[in-house]
Length: 562
Image 1 (cartoon, rainbow, N blue to C red):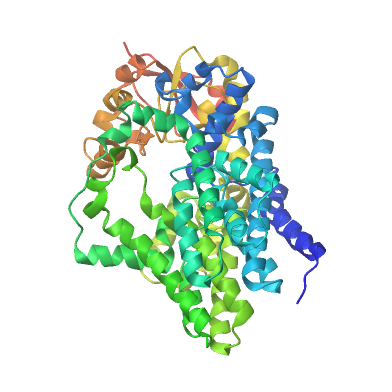
Image 2 (tube, helix red, strand yellow):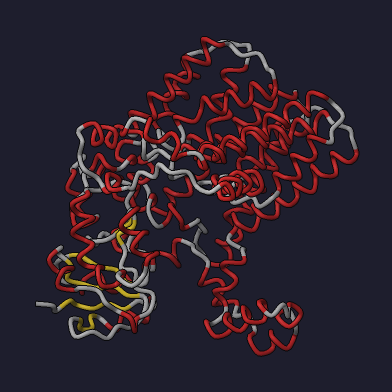
């Protein structure tokens, strides 16, 4: 069945409107995932845009972590994607970057599937599924561009200067540790699955150029590691003892059933992959069964690489130990979309196609709800804490009908305004109205955030002593620990979270009645203001600009510690 490009464009455009239009119509702002996106990489990109506009003045990065981080710690510093944040407002820059990522992902997978299964209707269908499965592009475009790079390796026609230019730009817009080092693994998996011919010398050269460009994009961090600059990662414990056999089995099983090692930058797909595996194994063609076996082995290897990490980590060069090699699982979506398209195009077994469509529609629902923000985690925000506790109590008692009853909703009717306000759009997450009110009322100095994302303040240009950082000096981690030492002292979980990992410089305050922050230590790091998600009572704090709280539900305090 042949496809017209008009059909391709129509379907793609409709999905773009669905992904971004629903939330824009409801809220007047664009929905975006928070984790490793709004709470970090988007803010890094905003500051990197300031870096470009200032003529590459490294001082702009002083807004983060008490001024301890350097411009080359951030992979956005020279990424081509940063040009959007240099020219446009953050929200428009984010949207343009997302659209670019979607186009690259769709076009690349469309070409790759055309090479693998011909111009079948599956090519358009599953190319869309792949493109809209990727939850954000601020990490880089390596996952988006992987199908295009693979297509260049597989196609019979050679390379021209334009194709090489795309390889270079994709590399410069990708992350070495998240994308670059894993491209060979995906290539090997697809070769084993499809037995497709590949120009070996071209594949090697494309891989070398691409990985080299991702190394350039991540060059600042590589430089810091080679110069032996002690970072917070230096303190990560080197675990060399294997977990229990049950834990190892659990790691591998989770990798196969729920792709749990793939949660960065793709939407959690639940157990849809299990149905696609069953579809492949119940297909009659030996080629499909072979492809399914290698796809299964790919996931098994991802799980095993995590489960058996203690057995081989000491043999890895120290500069590479902080790379989480199980993140190869990010690219499982490439492998399984190709597998599903092959099953759809080549298998006529009724049982196999039934399992294929169950998995397909399960994934469509998950991606649709997650990508538009209409998901259960946002729904729970429409209930008050008391109402939510009542719902959880009924759930634990297995009284599911009461939760869905008219009686429960009559008492605790969902508040649409609260639901919309709880969805993490740019407007809801960054609270621009509050910061516009606060802007001229802040004293000089830095901000400490309590009960809210510490990257909101630097998004608005305020310097902070906290934040989320993939790479920052070990000495600052030790200094910030003085601020939160009493707060985390009674929690083994929080102690391990900060001392063993420490990528999040946060206050750890979740209950205002248990406030144990050392404000004197915070002041030594330059903090003069506390921003809080809830009212605070402390002798070292005095209310600041209370009239602004009505604009965004936040509270500001001046630190008066000696």
